[in-house]
Length: 256
Ligand code: MLT
Image 1 (cartoon, rainbow, N blue to C red):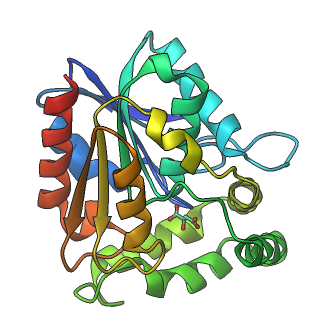
Image 2 (image 1 turned 90 degrees about the horizontal axis):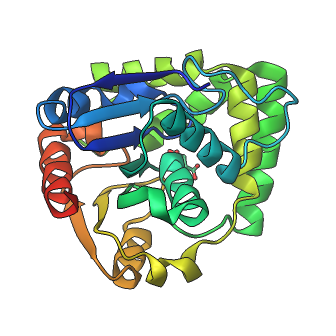
C-alpha cells in the first residue's frame, strides 16, 4: 500500500506530488485545507516512503493511478477531489479516465494533457539509463535550475530543500517513473468529457511545462477555471503558497 499523510475531517481532497518529489511538498496546503477537509497526500510508487513496483518496469500513469485508487479503497473513500502537480497531474488524468465515478473534482497543477514528443521520450530514456548508473543526483542537477521562477535563487531554502528531496528519492523509483512518463498516452481527446469542476493552475514563469499547455487544457474542459500565478515557476505550492491555497479553496467550494 502507498505511504501517505492524512489530516482533517470532512469532504476528501487528495493531493498528488510531481516527479521526483514526495507528499511533503504539499505541507502548506495540507495545513491550510485540513481545517475544512480531509486531506490525503500519498507518496506515489517509488517516491518518498512508497515502494517502487517490484519488477522494475515502467511506472505507468495508469498503474500509479490504480495504486491511488487502492489506497482510497483501504481508507474507505468512495469519492474525492483529486489534484495533481506535474507528473501527479498525469496520474490524476489517468485516474479520472480509469474511474470517473470516483472523481468529484479535478485539479491540474503545472501539468499538461499531451504525451511526450519523440525527442522528449528519447531524452527520458537516456536519463533513465543515467539514473540507473549514477542515481537520482543527475536528475537534481538537470531539474534544479528549471524548477523555480526568478524570485527563488539557488541560495533559497526552498530551492535547496527541493533539490535535496530529488536527491533522496530512490533511484529505482526515479528510473521507473521516467519510463512511465515516456510512454504515457496523450489525454487531450478526453478533456471535453471531463464534467466535474476543474482547477487548472500554472505559474506564468514555468520553464518545465509551458503556460500554453494549461491554457489549452482549460479551453477544452467544460467546467475548468484557469488560474495563472504571476512570477511563479513550476512549484506554485512553494513559491506562492497563499495563491495556491486560495485557488484550491475556491475550487473545493465549487466541488463540495
Ligand atoms: C514533474 O515535475 O512532475 C515532471 O518534471 C513532469 C515531466 O517531466 O513531464
